[in-house]
Length: 96
Image 1: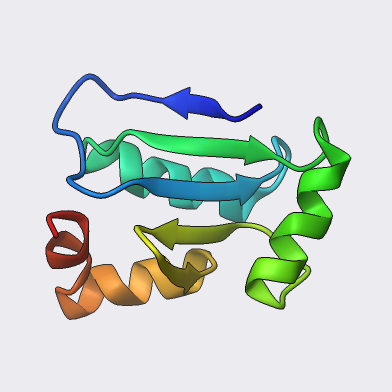
Image 2: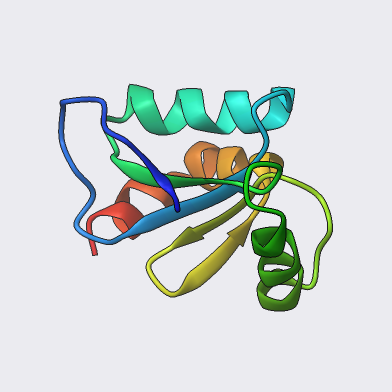
């Protein structure tokens, strides 16, 4: 099952899901941004739950981690998440 990462701050109005691995530096970087924003999210470790890797690939069409969803929208990976942050779009997506 997924682990819920809760920073104890503000919670996004939409559900945030991240498929990741514990050793991936890009996963940790994305996690850090979400935590800094006070966003609670589901962390799905695809190494602890191998069947979830196939699920991630089917849903995203990608093999790399992290793969992040905000609500029903597939955001993409770490670089995509940071691009949304830099463009000012991330906060709006999290408050929908």
